[in-house]
Image (cartoon, rainbow, N blue to C red; front, top):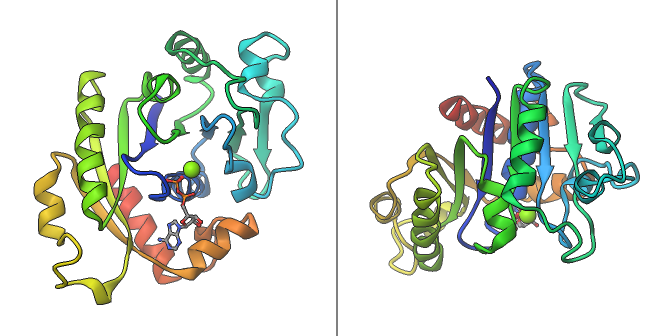
Length: 238
Ligand SMILES: Nc1ncnc2c1ncn2[C@@H]1O[C@H](COP(=O)(O)OP(=O)(O)O)[C@@H](O)[C@H]1O
Ligand SMILES: [Mg+2]
């Protein structure tokens, strides 16, 4: 059965794309057939994070409007062989994806992939609803900020309303020197604010930032502490 995981967050810039690209890479390195879907119409960036920006010709909107067959819009990530990207237009409002489109798409892809990972847009608008509509689980990326806790509460209610009960939380961009400061919520505060299973903590690290710009997921580097941590987090989810 294909697992469909939406990577989402209450607050923008939390690290959804970072987590989606690394989770997909870890699964693909293990030989799983993985499809990453970018649902950030007008703001896509998974292609850049994977170094595939020159290879996206067709995208989700072309598939939906019948301009091309789905197969033509899937871009293979050559480093892993079993990782594919389905991108979205760089023009705002062009895709107009509805939950019905996602249903047909995911049903058609379910046999071809073991995992579909959806990088969702910020906010809880129509495109976000379409993005999460077929998800069997959600990973909520949080940060150590009070605003993130509050936005996450709203996000969690929306996921609940859509029947997505399998929910995991990752606390990203953690700076160890902030721990103990009243200026930031503690891990205990975060854990009390959510009903999701907290599967890990990711430190703020320039290597992650650089990897996103270099088009090479950070987990492709040798067994660094960051890679080991991200692998452990994925193991807890799957
Ligand atoms: N743990 C981290 N350490 C350092 N930089 C990070 C980390 N997680 C994300 N970033 C950087 O933060 C920015 C926002 O991350 P991104 O994944 O694009 O967020 P979102 O998709 O939620 O908007 C990017 O520049 C990314 O490289
Ligand atoms: Mg993003």
